Amino acid sequence: MLLTETVNKIGVLDQQAMAKAKERLDNLIKPPGSLGQLERVAVRLAGISGQPRPHIGKRVVIVMAGDHGVVDEGVSAAPRDVTWQMLPTFIKGVAGIGVLARHAGASITVVDVGVAADVDIPGVLKRRVRAGTGNIAAGPAMTREEAVAALEVGIDVALAEIAGGATLLALGDMGIGNTTPSSAILAVLGGYSAGEVTGRGTMINDEVLEKKRQAVARALEINRPNPFDGVDVLAKVGGLEIAGLAGVVLGCASKRVPVLVDGFITAAAALIAAAIKPEAKNYMLASHLSGEHGHGLMLELLGLTPMLHMGMRLGEGTGAALAMHIIDAACRVLDEMVTFEEAGVMDMEEEMLHKED
Image (cartoon, rainbow, N blue to C red):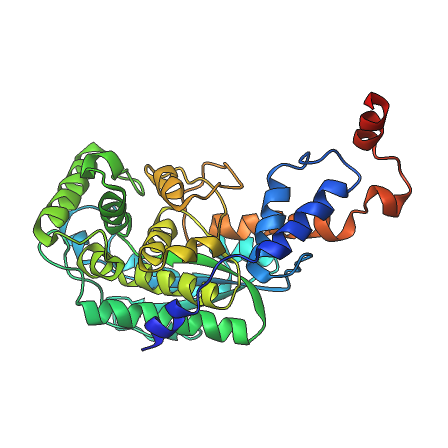
């Protein structure tokens, strides 16, 4: 099984490469640690790639699309058809992710892993496992077999992009109603109540928010997902695009390729990937802190620090695309700055230590 094979290949960070990267950073013409998170990102990239001076070349945003039966509970202000209607705008590069990915020099791969409408959109990879999930407030989202199949779609797509030369992948999502299953996933894996983790999502009022909280609460009560089994959580209260994105994370981790987590929905996918294989967290980078309620809790569970605080909550991979510039900067600092010795400049910290002696 592809899922098992992939999970078994996921290991730990390369400590030797990280030590070499840190040693170089500490000797660059600056006070140690003075570039803050740029330095931490550079060291993490070294550990992921196994290269003391990592380079980022081809980068790809993978946008997974799927629909959700829980929309029937009135949890979203937008109709279900918006999911498929948005896909051509991604392909044409005129949606938010199109603009920001282009600005970051990234291509976009759009995958239909579970759109409800039977549409054939040029440029969209048609890898549909089923036409949307079931209503999680009334029963499971999908079968366990379907959850595994959707995970393997994500693994396949990630491995294909990596085989084509991708050195950095970013997660993007499209699915009306998908903050509801994401809230349910966070509640299960974080041990929270529905009220603690369910936020407004997109454009909803107090009445719809209450419906959403009730839907999450019923989903947890009816389905009783096992928090110690990531695939069970996914099958019972997850989403098809969430499954696909979790598969992308696992595929990246198996190939030692960094993966940028975007906002609330992609972090739910990251939580599923980490529940399936905890070491997968080693290969994730948090792009930003979403404006969506609960995203910070997700990042805490994953042990990730967001690079950007922009109040963004569009999804699509927009925050991840923006963070690609930070990734580039971290690599360039490590590789292009010179050490005190290379520059022939006195290391002030060393000089002060000599004077104290």
